[in-house]
Amino acid sequence: MDKTRCAWGTEEIRMTQYHDTVWGVPQHDDRTLFEFLVLEGAQAGLSWSTVLKKQTSYQKAFDNFDPKKVAAYSDTKIKELLENEGIIRNKLKINSAIRNAKVFLETQKEFGSFDAYIWGFAEKKPIKNHFKNMSELPATTGLSDVISKDLKKRGMNFVGSTIIYAFMQAIGIVNDHEKTCFRYNEV
Image (cartoon, rainbow, N blue to C red; front, side):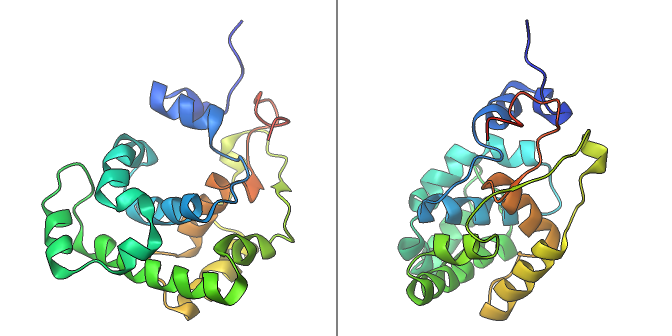
């Protein structure tokens, strides 16, 4: 018998794998948190499916999302990224990843880790929502507004409230699996 999933988790195999193994699972590794921050920013105006298809290319192009390396990217590296067909070649998004890496490192220094910073907004535990279907999911919440505002104040960009809410879902700060989804009680 096939498992019941959130409706979007059945669209294609890559989305199903992401749904079943990643989305909503609490993440605490700073490198992984930085990766999702960059990928969610890259998604702006695009589908998550498009970004997921390019994730492996992003990992290679962005030095496995090592924020120290990304923060030090030169104009030569930016030009290389703009010519890389494996990623979304948007200059604003690429420059944002570099800028955000610098702020990410400053935030790590201030809080001991980015994990401590970001999970502090949720009192260090996932928020389990109770949605019956995806149409009930908000695009933003009061918490995503607060985090977005704080990240912008720190100097990040491509961190609007909608992007941050998607980031919160991806890293498990919120569990937005539908109540009937087999992952709802697993994460």
